Image (cartoon, rainbow, N blue to C red; front, side):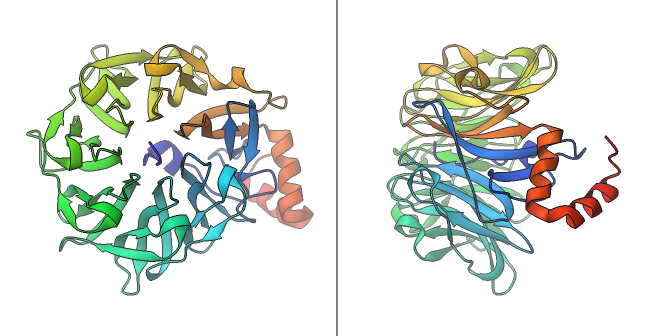
Length: 369
């Protein structure tokens, strides 16, 4: 509910620069910038996320609008903002060079992973408003990653040795317990946790949900295909994610309370959709292909009813397109990805790099348009 899923779409972007217009990336073809904003559905306006001239990512938003994420220059560094995305505080590391966030709760406790002084990757938790960073350990395995945190400070994530093993902690990150696995294999990854301690994620091929405090693990099934992944859960136990269908497509889904039943959310006219997060009203966000094949962000109504293109809910400059939605809070604030078309992207690059820097970049990119 207050985290970012670890998804290949974001990992596939090539970071270039962050400018005064927001936290930005460059698409692999160098045709456009892709920038991150908060879309406030109450005012229907975009709020820029501006981590002071570095590349990076925004990964989660809590119910007062504090955003967790990370910047990246030589190393990645976790950060937290103030309410409504204002300001930015570097959370430092566990003694190594880098840190990355994945989740934030309403107290501003942030979780993720960091390099230690010895270079190992360990899950961490901070205190309220990102103060301090505590190593959560690895349960004796090689590495650990914290992906989400609830309002009691229970953390979900996974450790890594030969396989990935989902875990849950007690309040404020105290104690770490493995959740076990589904019958389909030894691998489990936890993606989100609600205030009851119900955890969702994936096994080798299927999504799962646990009972309160991580007890028990139930296979959520699929939409008729052979795989599913759950990325988000709200306090009613409604889970969202994506699944293959009997026809071989990948579609976003929502379940009923406590993971019961799985409903296909459809698409915005294309073949593909993915649900990344859900709030306590049951509003689901994610992205979908259009009939044209282009990707647009979507939001649903309560309990996943109706899928609406987020671009229709706010004014955008000509050529700008909101292509993805990462996280939503109960206040109706959504972290979104917006494409900036090529001419405007060039203007931003001029502003951020200067003429000489831009020419060097342009020549290396091979773009002549």
